[in-house]
Length: 306
Ligand SMILES: NC(=O)c1ccc[n+]([C@@H]2O[C@H](COP(=O)([O-])OP(=O)(O)OC[C@H]3O[C@@H](n4cnc5c(N)ncnc54)[C@H](OP(=O)(O)O)[C@@H]3O)[C@@H](O)[C@H]2O)c1
Image 1 (spheres, rainbow, N blue to C red):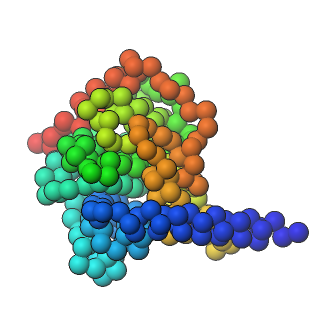
Image 2: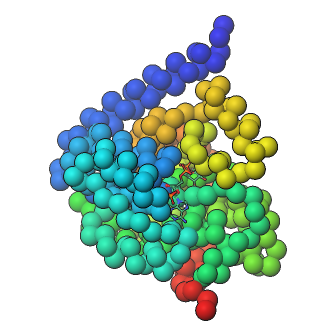
Image 3: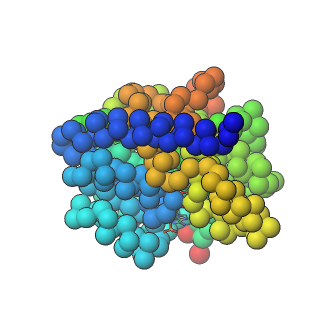
């Protein structure tokens, strides 16, 4: 039996089923959604932006990133309700600036990220660039847009696309939370994933956020250019995997992510690559949540070092 072909055809029918359900729900939404996508110029973010446009043709979709030509190509598909905000999302000052340009948001997608194996690389605000884009800047984005999300008539939804399956809270380095003394890539990856698990719980625990749901997703293996910055000996296996049909396309991933968003009614939730709940996720204690929140607020309040 060809197991790979079988798995592929099961995946296709799963995608078709969730896409049909996504259309049914989204096409009838009134008023149309305002969707904001950090990292919307490529890969998973691009896929989600275009999927919202497809399911809900009147949706207002704003994509954010740095690549103008990639944005132009996506804008041509988004039509008159599409918008691009150009910004470097590794800088907290930029995030504060551009969030002031946003007037409405029902769905906030945070898919901005970079993949490289260089050590700690501080931005001008003295935050490691990978963590700044994939964690601190994302949380600041949410913080700045919370008033709009709280007033969404559909109930605000926030999706962090990272890895909801692998964060290990017991391995957080509590005495060096920004990893400024002892940096390692493993610790940096773990902090990003575990902090995201904790920060969604903190945000959902605040009574003023009762109208907003916070979701952390593992998108699975998705065929995107995220590995292009890696050295060739690491890029090669990814290219072979992709050529052999490994993973899913950004379009397929987008349907599962939207399915996960639509299936989250209140509070917080970790979802997997099919948009279903990650089982056995530990609920963390209040003190831990507060510690991560206060640390995140301290780091995101940084301004450029002269
Ligand atoms: N692909 C996978 O298999 C996979 C698996 C697990 C988790 N993830 C996670 O999913 C997220 C999205 O990954 P992807 O595969 O879709 O990656 P991608 O195709 O490389 O897209 C990354 C996006 O982030 C934006 N970005 C990066 N640095 C930025 C900066 N300084 N300022 C503004 N925008 C910035 C890029 O925009 P510009 O180029 O326009 O700046 C781009 O839109 C990442 O956090 C990744 O770690 C991906």
